[in-house]
Image (tube, rainbow, N blue to C red):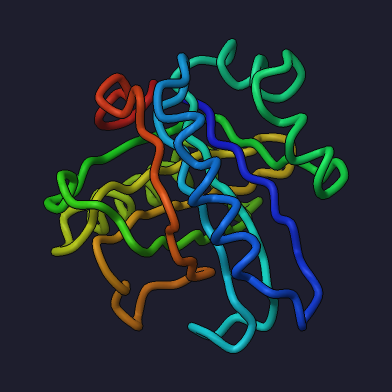
Length: 196
């Protein structure tokens, strides 16, 4: 499993209805995409849910590296982002765990993404193990569609991404997003539990 996200930060006075329309008219294009576990079409709106910015920030969990590569540089879809917004940096992490939640059959309407640096004074096995415990605990909460953990070993950064049926509890850390659409053609193929 591979996690990927790009953030497109938009002007403060940007009409987010444009992004909503974009997703409503184009979002289903990846509903049957080979190699894609899920794509959550995420937005943050300035002044809503604590966001200081307007942002379009899709988050992906790829079942295969070939699917991710084809999307990014094989003509498989990313060219539309580049044409409309320029080429944003794409963050990516190696999958460490995926856990379905009790609301996995619901349509998620919200998401949280929490990134953190793994402490340098703790062995990677122990640091990732602690993060894995947090993902398992989150996945068991009411209203959770699914929760994933991935790691960037270049920067030793972890990302904990969770999809929620509705607004997440206030005590959940990280950035909060609205989910406009979920493409999940190979969600069932993502390995449940840890990925090693």
